[in-house]
Image (cartoon, rainbow over all chains, first blue to last red; front, side, top):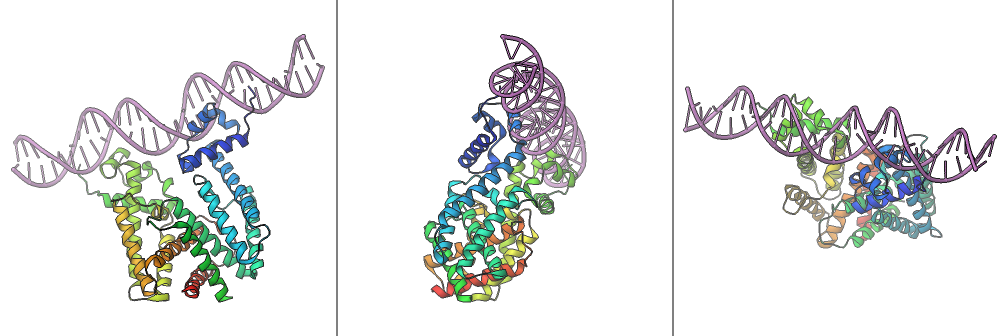
Length: 186
Length: 186
DNA sequence: ATTTATAAACTAATTTAATTAGTTTGTCAA
DNA sequence: TTGACAAACTAATTAAATTAGTTTATAAAT
């Protein structure tokens, strides 16, 4: 019965379904198995149960985000690089509403998740370097920047912004205000 | 068997346990019932099952946050009011790591949750008014401010900031940068 | 061509959690 | 003292995840 199902295909399908549902925790192994035309226990040949699936999805999401950021920022520096990073971060969240939430959990020391996280962090530091920031200064600002991005998109995805007011404008305004704040201080 | 157990006591105990566990979804009805010395089905006399409990905890959290903000800001205006609001928001999150996450979900139109949310929003608008912002301008900035706050504290609670670098400093820096950004534009 | 090893499927059974149905029992008010 | 009700209970059901043990298709080795 060795079919052509792989771990990658399982995770890919899980991501699709989770994004369709809008929340990864609404996806049940029963639904995933059905979508793959197998029985639930057969999933255990590919992922370590529900928890293992979540882990795999987290790695999937972090990898994809890292790729998107690097593509979006390529060739840009300073304000333009920061804005491009911000826009692609938000685009990633919109395209992945169901699994987005998985990216905020820190990885265990030594884990794959931690490795990818550090990778993305060092890339962000590179951008801030082009912006004129370094050392602890830059680390504080990376935290701030991540907070902005995560806060906005997670509120957006959760439906936390109720008013009838353009979200693109709110987002751009937020990033611009923050960037000009960075300049005001330095 | 009419004991002196009330819905308030059930919700209060649930909040304690959830905050102790650090994630409301790790709290099982079995554990809550045990802590209250009753059997699981008896919980249904007080809350509408697991979902009803979550709703009640959300209202509990939103109400508490609204109170804390009003207390913290009382008598302050401008920069000082914004900073006080930010610090008390973060303090709320630290004191309520398990149920904090519940506050970001928007309420159904007409619901209690929506009512409290609007209340807090109008209070924040009041602060921004003292800061010199009004209209759509102010609404965009409220969104930005909420994003900052939520982003920072949720990353913090989830362990998303891995580096050995003072978090209080990162937070204060973030708020200050943003405020000076607001001034730079206006 | 046949055997053998293995990966990946399966069925069946168990565990945990939430829920529903129906029953019992204190307390309070008529 | 009786009757109503709220709040507890037991027992049974449903849903989901997991584990154990079995079967089977493919692919490599004789």
